[in-house]
Amino acid sequence: MTFDWNEVWDRHGQSESLDHMEVSGFQSFRDVDTENCAGKLIELCKIKPQDTVLELGCGAGLLGRHLDKYCHYIGSDRSFAMVKKTIQLNHFSALAISANDIVFKDKAIDHVFAFSVFHYFPSYDYAKTAISEMLRVARKSVCVSDIPTESHDGNHLLFDEDFFEGWQISEGLYPREHRRYTARLDLEV
Ligand SMILES: C[S@@+](CC[C@H](N)C(=O)[O-])C[C@H]1O[C@@H](n2cnc3c(N)ncnc32)[C@H](O)[C@@H]1O
Image (cartoon, protein in one colour):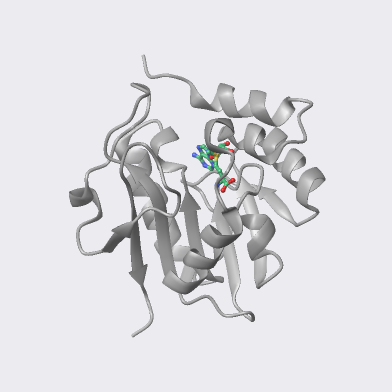
């Protein structure tokens, strides 16, 4: 039986904590400069202030809180409890959306990204459906970041770079103990 990450994230969303790092599960490296990481994402995906950006799995909004000040950002998360928590913490708009069923029409959003989310998916088939949904909804770019190829946690779903064949690969946004990478596709010709 596969590990139930959904239960873990629902629990994080329901917690009393108002600490972004703790709610997002990053308590062990809380000194990360998340504003700088959001800046790297903006540069990498060529996000402009007038662009719409949808984040899948926004969690407590570690990146979303910075993006929201720069562009038209929409947070989303599979966990309804997490959505409520992130609105409470950040005061941005967020929706309960599962990555394999994105409730937006085709080409509705300029950039769609997921940061530190894919390793919580239940299977590779689920990840493939999520990618096809991201590609359906996005107009300018899709980006999946901080994808682990190895992990301290045996319950993480690991992805080698071949999974993202044809995408542009670069380093992860956060400095981590194990290497994580970013996979990005520009959709504009
Ligand atoms: C490590 S946190 C993400 C951190 C967040 N991106 C940030 O920068 O603060 C992982 C989040 O992914 C969400 N998640 C996991 N599986 C998901 C899925 N299938 N669809 C959408 N969100 C998902 C979890 O509920 C959790 O909030």
